[in-house]
Image (cartoon, rainbow, N blue to C red):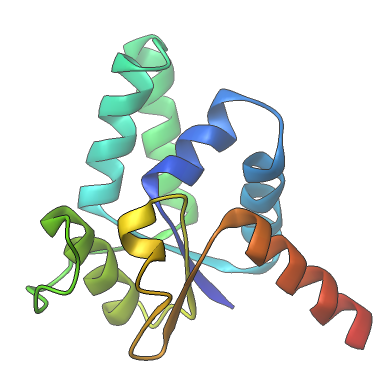
Length: 136
């Protein structure tokens, strides 16, 4: 399955052990993570400014993401979000053929879905995965 992990999910995955870290690991192990240069840039900025990680560690994380995820450069997409930067997230999902955008961003979550891409919280994704596993 192809998924976009939005910046806030990636930051939470590296900042602490919790649901986002679990989702990140599950996605690494069994899914294709779709990201963009925009997301990588935001992750780099937030890890330095908000989490206060050293530049060298942040660079290792960015390199790791580049090597494990599929990086797409989003095209211009129609403005569908209140926050124009979120349009880049939607565009990356569309170009990368992602099934889900996993995010804690309320501007994105308010859409619920855009074209074939479902926009859900980490908790909703975790519930989806559990239901899917129980059907097998």
